[in-house]
Length: 225
Image (tube, rainbow, N blue to C red; front, side):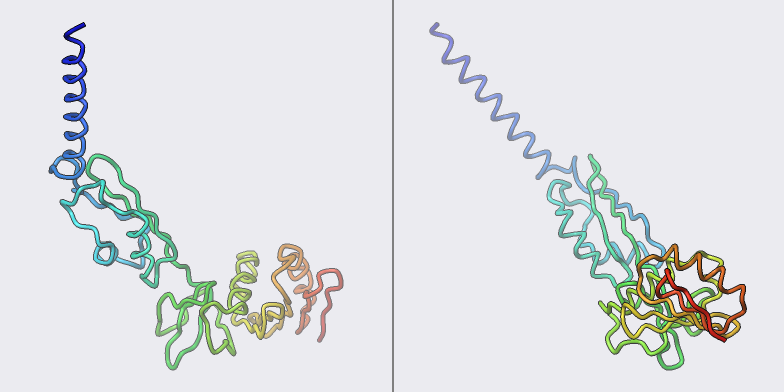
């Protein structure tokens, strides 16, 4: 009985030593620090650019890496749509990014600005990339424009064979998207709903060699010319 207080004191001292040792290993030692930083999913953005803005430093304790804050910094890069940062013990940080995808081209002076569905300019090009239609009469503000979002979504709804025929898109508003196809055919598409049904009817009506095809109301599709 007399030895029990000593035994408790020894056990308490051991517990404190373990906690202190764990804290030292996590925060103060060179055992669990960032040695490797992996970047995945980047194509437009270089790994060096991602690392430069991430705020990460090799040699800092892995437990001190704020993954959410690091991801937010990386998402400041224009070409990055979203970023996810995770730690992989004992010494690695993994950065996985999703880059923006250009869905339409907008003329700007003598160049083309390649824009994603959110109206963000992904990059510029001296020529229109093959398979990327031009948005004619674009809104004054591209970023966040519902019309731009609708135009890009309509293009995504088209089967690849039909999308390859589209030269330009006009979208005064999200509910009034028009397409101009190779050969001069005008397609009144309307809004973004019923994309599969509209595409199927368009494929059939194009066989009539009409100059204007209206599938804005898929229940009463019409042709002219």
